[in-house]
Structures are given as structure tokens and as C-alpha cells.
Image (cartoon, rainbow, N blue to C red):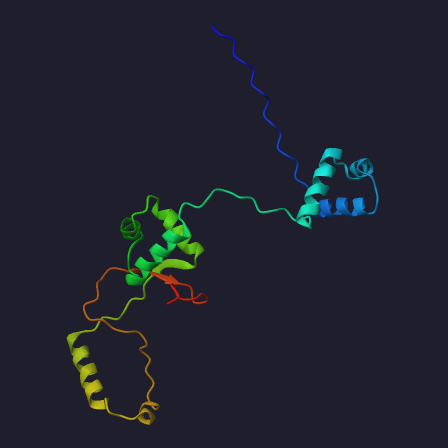
Length: 188
């Protein structure tokens, strides 16, 4: 049996200092205090002091830089492709969207990216059912008043603001939509 090589001990994570402390160290250095004195005063090693001051000169501030993180699975091109399908059919399901776009990722990934771009999959408003009698009465009213001037219509108040479809399905529908405060899905 061959002797195994000893493994190295795990490396300790680098100590993170707050932006306030880093700015204080930079101020002390500009005041002319040596690295060793700053290290003693702040309770930081001399090597850390020189590293902090080197990065402070490059960054021009003591704020921490954003870390890179894991790269996104969907590219901006993929997301624009998804937008195109949503524009064509806002009632498409997330699963159908993934299949049509031919993406090799989970439905949750698609949903998360769409939410990041301000698009949510929410319940569609239910439309009231319209019976044949109601449809006939509405058509008669429309034909009777089609030629009335706008001044005549100002006296009317319509409380029914939704559109109505005959024979609309029984089950709840879901729709992709952008929040009201955002712009339309695609700039056309």
C-alpha cells in the first residue's frame, strides 16, 4: 500500500473589513501615520493594511465591489425570444413556453428570469358569462343607438368595464403581464 500524501489544511477565509473601517485606514494613511502604527491602532495586520490601501487607491472609495456570482443560464437573447412568444399568446403556460423556445432549463428558471424583467404569471380576470338572451339585448341596444352623437353618450354611465366573451371556458386562466409601473413587453 502506497503512503498517502498529507493533505493541506483548509485555507482560512480572508477577513472582511467594513467600508467604514477601510475609509478610516485610508484617512490615517493620508494623515501620515505609518502602516505599522495603523495596524496597531485598528487591530489589523500590516499586510491587510497595505492591501486595503492598494485597493482603496484603485476603487477611489471604500465600498466593496460586487462579486461576480454564478453566470445566468438564460441569455438576453433567450429572454427576448421568450418575450416574442408571450407577445403572440399571453395565455401560454410556462411549460409550453419552455417547449416552444426549446430551452434546456427548468420552468422555475424561466419564471425567475421573467420576474426579474418585471413580467409575472398571474390569474386572468374572469369575464362574466353572456347568455344568448343578454347577447340579443346588447345587440339590439347597440343597433338602436349606433348613430347617437357624443354629446348624447356623455349622459350615460357604464359600470361594466370588462369585455365579454360568449362561451368562455370554465377553468381559471393564467396570463403573462407586466406590472403597471413598467413599460410594455417589447418596444415596437
